[in-house]
Image (tube, rainbow, N blue to C red; front, top):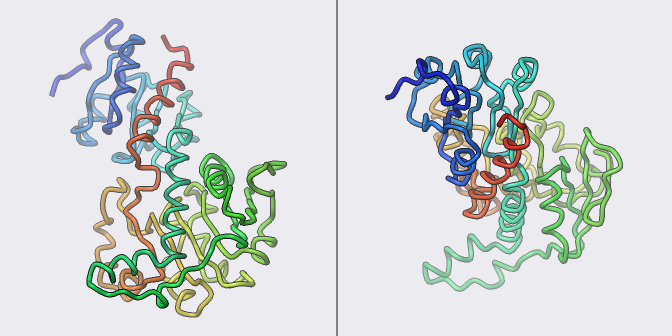
Length: 330
């Protein structure tokens, strides 16, 4: 591995560490602008700490947590560019206090998230997973797979930023009412969703979809108390973060009939990288909770791939490129 720490001049001044792999459009654009991009995707945390001292930028997904130790070591750092929406792997307040710009790119994958959420919901309501398996095995069960229409239902969105707004736009044409609750915004009603409060969601919703970041006030926000407040039985969609939902409580609510179905692209048992199950929760795969989720026809699962399209892969890099260039470092 080359050691860049002794280099001076413009090379050292404009060095950007690519800690994770992203679409090449970002690296190509930064190099055209005059940055020196270094592939650090194979470096360990210890190697990164040794080499980050003169880097002006870091490009990450979720492989490494950018904490105080990292930020103190990266004394020349001007920006952190996250290829994605969530910022929970970065100590944002400490970074910003040190003058580091923290950039994310929800504009790049919001449409992919909206399409994925809609696809999971339609698959669940129309029993497509079960019907597909049955036909492949030679069964032809029409009545057992009679579906439920989305039209006429009330869909509640918790969080109405890039992701929630994109999902609302995808719902146009399905003749459903869309309510949106966002505790951080005011006056955000638009042609796609009506601004609401949690009480209205509890009273009216047939379907609830999460579009919030993982933060202290959203960690395990979906728990037994939350689910008990809904007047009607609901379908839950989670394309946000796994730890927004206490899975044991969700399964208990499904068994009790409070939740009629769940579309889960994320699980609380994911590793920080989102690439695998967290080895610290390996016993989860032997738990009754997991067996219920894995066996139930009322559950649709995917491995954190909402927002993981070919188009969003490139778009995320182009969004970040524009944001980095706008900082005016070169």
